[in-house]
Amino acid sequence: MNGNNKFQFVDEKDIAEDTKKEQEPNIDITKRFYFSFEARIIVSIILILILFAGACFLALKVINHTTVQKVNYVENGDVNYQVCLKNSTCVPENAKYDSSDITTIKVTFKYDAKFDKKIKNNNSYRVAYIVSKYDKDTHNLLDQKEINLIGKTSFSSYNENYSNLEVVTIDYNKYKELYNDSNNIDSQIEVVYYLEENNETRKISGLVIPLSKDSFELRKYTTINIKRGTTIKVNIWDNYSLIYGISSSLLVLISLILIYRTTRLVLKVTNNKNDYEDTIEALLKEYDNIIVVARDGYESIVEKEIIKVEKFEELVKVRDRIGKPIIFSRVNNVKSEFIVEDDNILYKYVIKEADFID
Image (cartoon, rainbow, N blue to C red):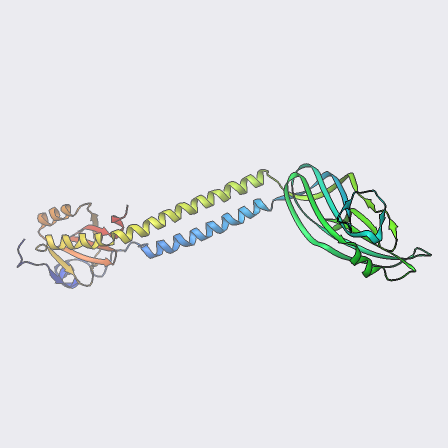
């Protein structure tokens, strides 16, 4: 390579001066649409967001594709207690108690339900005591109020069976002083286990404790093998659910593929960005004695047949055969052209940044 024959910069009008005299002027070659790297990334991101949104929408369709079904179950509620005395002993159930000797009463509630199928159960329970006051002579109810001992507690299970155990301690002397305030009134507290199901509240079991009697027995009530039914929403797996599920999975898969390809493209461009420039620089350096550079880009002023060559060496052979220089034109920052112009034909070797991305 001769250092004195470096490539020269020329204007487009100088390159085509002789051709202009012989050919019809001002006919530009139609440019091909170029889809830039930035546009490809933006379009990919938009597609990914649309596909993910569609996948989420279809997934919600599957989740919300439900029906109301009736489920039968058998319900049991029991209550046990121990009466603890001042001598630190506790007396078992079904005895007669002296009110002056009682300190506390331990109450244990047991609840269980057996469903005829596995369901998702979302109910709640609470434990409260009800204070009731009656006229001793007429037994008419004078006053009643309810106070929670255990507030509303949600329970959730996904099984055929559900069971619960709760223990509360009743300070007998405390309640006796609070609510036994008249000789003409009978007062009592009723400790109750409530179940709340489908906006309905019902008593499952309870224990009645007199407060105005010197000696008494405790009365309890329970629920034994009561058959009930409830309506619940259950998911349906039918043809619609299958279509929604498959479609959602496909959209997610396509989104993941696009994410992979977009990420790979960005990494490739980042890692190989200089390969494009390095290749152009190497060609200009190696063939500087036969290349001229179109400073403002190159456009043919007449319409000619375009022949694209696959290798730069093929363009060199054309140049050697017709004896005209190779014109270098930078189309944009990611595409360049090497051109040999004959009378009726343009020979082009196109090099793009995308050529260096697998």
